[in-house]
Image (cartoon, rainbow, N blue to C red; front, side):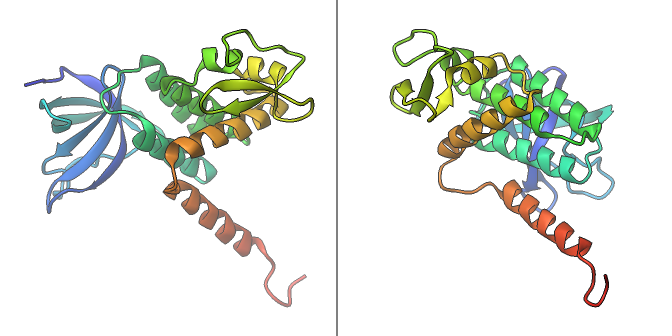
Length: 243
């Protein structure tokens, strides 16, 4: 039987498992994403296993489904509001949907921690933080720096050329003015999305890649965010008769 010895982790998702227990997806540094039964988690008086809060965790079990033995808050609680909350829900859903279970990644754990810190600061522009998390996740899935910076045959991308993505081969040359500029892809490989123009290119490419990896089932977090923005927009309209 495998037993953890005091591991930091974040609750990505929780749902009822029985009348008193919950089924939780957890992101850890040493074992990646794990799924565990938290017995008694739904009883009154129990500390809630809330998202965006770092926990010290202990669990045991050999199978893909662990049993959570202990979960204590480390004191790091990231309070996300408004757009930042929906950005956090989006990140959590991506990790649950796409991360293979028990695939350790200290880099991705650190990227997720940084994302929560940035979202908690409520920046006006959330996009660079989200692109960094998407980039770290894609790197974990095999679409990292080497893929971004090289042509299908393995040669480095040319900054003066344009490229199109082919899922079976990789980056292939494209007519000028179409696809993605080589200079942009090389800049993306460095993982800095602070430049607005570069961030827009990254958003387009990462959306294309992530949507293909996710398949036909839509992200619930996107639907929730869309409904939130529509409600926000409707409430900001002046009532009929007002000017």
